[in-house]
Every structure is written in C-alpha cells, then in structure tokens.
Length: 359
Image (cartoon, rainbow, N blue to C red; front, side):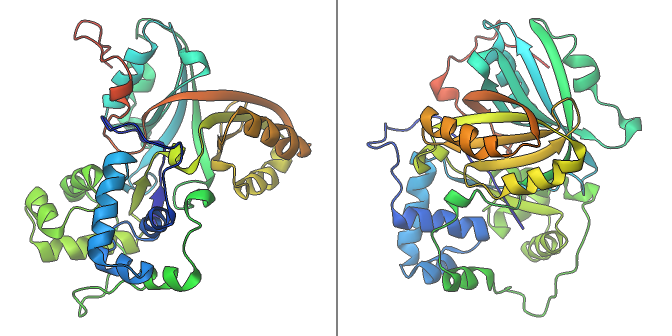
C-alpha cells in the first residue's frame, strides 16, 4: 500500500537545464517506486529491462537533482490520529519563520505558503482520543504572535491522494511491467504475513522509515534493536494490514507542473460524493478530500502554467453546477510534505536564532 507525495525541493542542487528533465527511464523508475517503494533495484531492473546498476545510478541522480525520496509513514486512522487542515493568516514579515516552525514539528505535514505568502496551510496530526487533547490547535497557535486568523478543517474522507497516485506521475509502465513489480518475492518463504495493528513498540521502526523508507533490514534492525528477520516480518505484517505505507516524493516541476493551487469548494451535501469522485478522476488534481467547515471539499491542482490552471477552472470545474463557491489559493512554496524532514530551505532565507518562531 503506497502513498504518493510530491513537490519536494532539495537543500542544494545545480540548476536544471530544462523545466522538465525527466526522460522515459526516469519516469518509469518513479512509477515503479509508486508501485513498491521498497522494491529491490534488481526487481525494478527486471521490469524496466535495464541493469540493476543503471537503476541504482538513476535513483541516486534523481535523489540529488529531483529530490526523489521514499519515506514510510503510519496510516493516520490506524495510528489513532485525526488530520486537521489548518489555514493561518500571518504578517508577511513572519510568515516564513512561522511556516518553518510548523515544519519542524513531528505532528505536522504538507506545510505550504499560499496566497501571496501571508497564508500558511498545513496538516496537523492530532490524537483522535478526545482525552489526549491537542496543545498545538488549542493553545500554541492561538497564542502565537503575528497570527491574525486561524481556521481548522477536519479531514473527513480522502477521495484522491494517499494510496492513489497522481496520474501524470504514474503512467510510464505497461501492465506486464506493473505485474512484475507487484509479484514481490518474500525472502522468508516459510513465513506468511499476518495483518497487524501498530503498537507502541513500533515507534523506533516508524521513525527510521520516516527518514528513509528504503533503509535496509540491517539498518532498521540497528534502529529498533530487533533482528533483521524480525524487522522483515514486522514490516510485512504492517504492510499487509495497511498500518504503514510508503510515500514517493519528487518535485512535480520535473513533470511540468509549475503552477500549483489549493481549491476550496462549497458543495451541497447531496452532491458531495458525486462531485468528489468526479474530481478524483481529473488528471490535473493530486488530492481531493471532504472536510468540515464552510468549504467542505478541498483539492490540489497541478498545472503547467496559469493559463492551464485557468482552463481547468473555467471549463472542467465550471461544468459542475453542484459547486456553489470556489476559492483558489496559489501555492508559492512547499515547506514540508508528508515526511518529517524540512525542505526548500535552500531557496529561502534561513531565520536567525532570534527570529525563529517556536511552537
């Protein structure tokens, strides 16, 4: 079970020659990782009909030049977490510092600067158990200086995103190549994976996978104190049970998607399911989810340029009469995606210690 994540920018890299630098082999490798983020290079090579050395070399180049990463994460629902999509309005002078402060927290993901750089959008992972409380939502954010407005929207259901890939990043392999990648051979053939739920004992494993979803069993064993065999079996159990998944992160600009926007829509409840499933079939969208609040449907559009975005909004969304209102928020900067690592620091001013915001 795989989640697909995009829009990561590396800390430092040479300028790319072209806006879209991916060739057919690059796209095929990324598609292969969407199918199985931990697939051995030898298995990917067999599907792509190239050598394992070529796959390894391309993976390293994409990791350095296109911010390609594979990270392992816990399924929020199975981990007892509720996701809140928050919108913060902040003073322009402090918005970047606040965004990076949010990105440094382990309970946040998808931190973005939008709408001229004065609005921050992020997802907060809060305990579903009401007794556990949520200090970030209830105490820290309302008391933060220079935050002028806060709204929180509970993510109720995801129609696109998570295990569903953005179609334009996963269209390179034919059916036979995909079959090869899905026929993963378990090293311990005598062991049959059993669906398991996450437990407190999996914390170290999850932390290691968040840093590198392709870490070897030996590396994960060192991080957890388990044996490599125990790590392999635990991973298999958690994957079969859908408790963990693997995200593929890559800069969507390499696919020609240079204009990104969040779409906040208000849809009548009677038509919400129909509109959401229709949008989930649009190639221009990478994320569609139902939320609480006055705008009950949110999506992320990935388009080639502003004219392409206008065409999508006017012709495709415009044909859906059940959408009563639409607010478009251009995404200016992706500070953090799903993994706990902060990105895009190379392109922005690093805040001085005195200027940093703590949350």
